[in-house]
Image 1 (cartoon, rainbow, N blue to C red):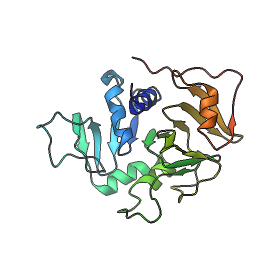
Image 2: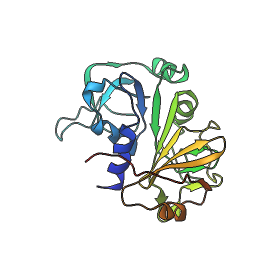
Image 3: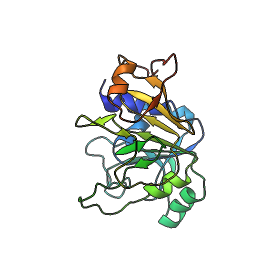
Image 4: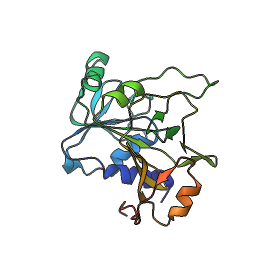
Length: 218
């Protein structure tokens, strides 16, 4: 199982029936592959679709049906397309039950940095700031390290997306919950020891006596 699949499968377990969920571009988009359709979860993309589904088979792409990053998607029966005003009204109005976003860094305060690397050209923040501020739950889905460097750090060195504390961090090594007291290690990935997580994390972790293994399915 790849690191991406571990993350996506574990994130899928955090999403509940009959909810409206935003999936960020990149790794989070793949979460929809592991959702039981019977749960009736509607996925939203900030460019204006409610009822987003996974990437279609090759040759079946529709150039007018994309996610916020321009990647091809499909739509579930009953999906709706809306303009930016309505789309961001859903986000800013507090109507999203959850958002799943990628991350560049998360710090001990639970602050997320995910929209820009200084010195690199980017088109803009997109909907990230609104999503972190407006969704009821904010789940960060990212690999634990980047080129061997920890991404869960004492303090973000990259520009913050928002100053609101995120709800949960899910990586290929661990599930970590940011709290008022700090970052609590609540699960470890299959085959990963607590000591390996500590070694790959420069932020201080609060470690319970027992850290269970993630349940991610086959």
